[in-house]
Amino acid sequence: MNILKQIVLDLQPQVEERKQRVPLPELLKQLADLPPVADFSAAFRPDRSNIIAELKKASPSKGILRADFNYCDCAVELEAAGAAALSVLTERNYFQGSLEYLQEVSRIVKIPLLCKDFIVEPYQICEAKLHGASAILLIAALLTPTELHRLADFAMDLGLSVLGEAHNEAELTVLLDGGIRLIGINARNLKTFACDLELVKHLLAQIPSERIAIAESAIKNRAELLALKQAGARGFLIGETLMRAEHPGEKLKELL
Image (tube, one colour):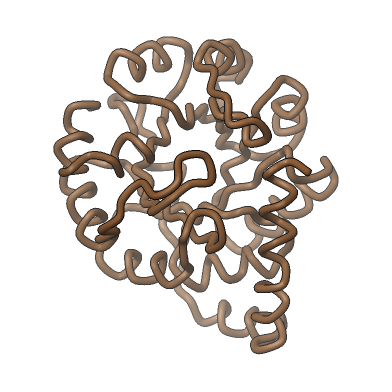
């Protein structure tokens, strides 16, 4: 079994437990009282390099990235350093994330937030909005085309932006066939953990200009960022490079 399937298999009991405590109809009632969220796509201005700085303690491929996971301090530091948006890992088992991290960060920063998780059902999307997200991630490799577009429509009806993620041409085609505006190309194959920035450049070139193309993962320095920008990226999701830095804000300034 590949790691993506294993992650989803392991998270489902936790989601079911939360659904027992707070059923979906109750969650939807709570959402009705919330104000509109920030426009995530508006963060990607054409006149600058737009970095989504990712807050994550660990990953299944690299283990612990930041033992002292001072996520609130990091969030404030990264916002001050010029992050266009933040991504907060909320998956517990493999990334040691939490929806509570997302909620706490949403209270202390003004830039928009992406809920980074392995979303396979509407309940998770409702949780993301309730905890302060203005966008969610949908991974094409996890979902059938019908599931992907159904979940994207559900999220957009709630006022959330959707970042669709592809790892290959077939997945990119599925994303482009729908109404998802933000298209992420992940350099890291989540089935094998291998990274390929050249493949990212190849796929970025296939994304129409009316979409917002985002290069994800494996970006270590400004030269790589500029090469991906030249290939068509308007945004860059960067996690490990920032989380391994003693001062994430200073590292972000280097990349910018």
